[in-house]
Image 1: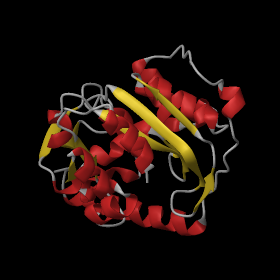
Image 2: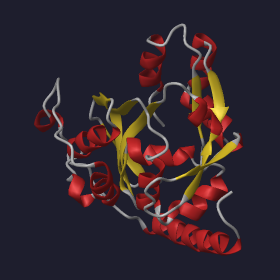
Image 3: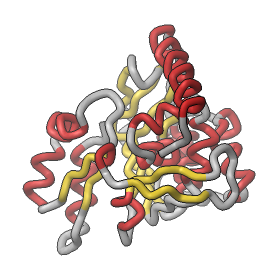
Image 4: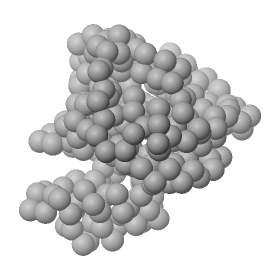
Length: 243
């Protein structure tokens, strides 16, 4: 989970604002996840509202330049917000290679059954989502990053934060901080083709000085789980459209 201290730092700068903290857990009850991650205490301290996006209303958004899906069901609370902040963890991912701000947007697709339908095409799907969900601020929390895969991960003490208004630029820098070339990440290649190349200029620490080479792995148990989800997704797609 994203470090609660990083979320606290953001909340301290949003005093006086009506803040919603949204999450759509795929492996446990979202409210339980909030509790375990320390977000319940933050909610009480700062008056922020915790939202289980899996139970949110849905708006079916038409995608202007579809890569994979013509329409995608997005959580209404996200689309209704005046200012969206995307806070992601610095980590590798078995099927998407990396899970940063762009992959984090996959959680705006609700409920979970719709994410299952799309999961085998996650690299294409997140490029569709980014056309209708456009965060104004994007932050990667890399205080303690995760390497290997998302289920059986091991910590990496990167001790960094990456942030900026342009999601794609932030993810490109995040990749390099893990020693991963953006060209090796399919959804970043697709996004650069759709949204254009980025001439990224950083301030603060140099990437070369903070870079750590994250290990990538596709453990058998994780790949079996994804194979089963792909089958379920194919069955769901055969039964119905995204709703």
